[in-house]
Length: 329
Image (tube, rainbow, N blue to C red; front, side, top):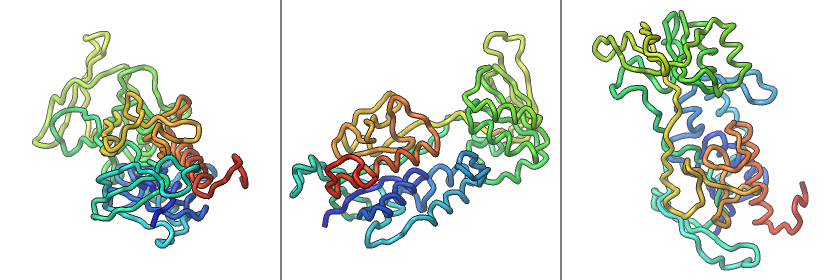
């Protein structure tokens, strides 16, 4: 039996795509390589506050994902879930019916040795396999790339590397409990929201810019204790800092296992290029969230939700044979 839609990935964007598909009575499958939902938010930032949900001042990452999950009308007869499951093959095939509506259907094979047919596919798998950009080659117990327990930073001297929203958000979240917070960034200009930077300054966060990490200059086994920073324009301005913990927020490299299964148009960061319907260069395959790109793209949870809604609404129009754009909306 053919199903309406396959949703690939169950992070924040995938959760919202699932909710929209359920609300619109689509049949399908949600497939997620991890054991549960939530994506990067749950795996890497469960205790980081989310500040950009409308009407919610702040909410912990895992709690936000749990609440999103609870809003979904779950019915395995309509939309089945496959957690801890990977896709092994996607083949575009000629439709058996409605050829005037569909250029492609898709035969998809899964790692649980099942196979299904779908009329449409939407990628919501984010950045794919998470590989953080490292500070140094050696693994130190007190140098981390994601935060699972904020209590370990209580009354500690913490150095945070990075200039984006994640770095500044962590500084603001930890400032009330840490002994000190120092932000190190390679430029004077930050990608983070100006209001959050101002808030960090008011919270007593120290900023060192423009500085680059040079080396760990003192360690005790697997514990780093002191580091050296260099100024990119003046070698005489190098500094050494003692610390208890380092949090690295340089971002991550993108590894997309599934892109090799089909020939997509992608940008230089390997993100799927989509049109204003959120449809890729492969007819019938859509993308939303961190995995996609278009000219006015903004990386934000809320824009990911909009993209998921837009993709699913366009899929519903196709599979339910709506003839007029926005008919019923």
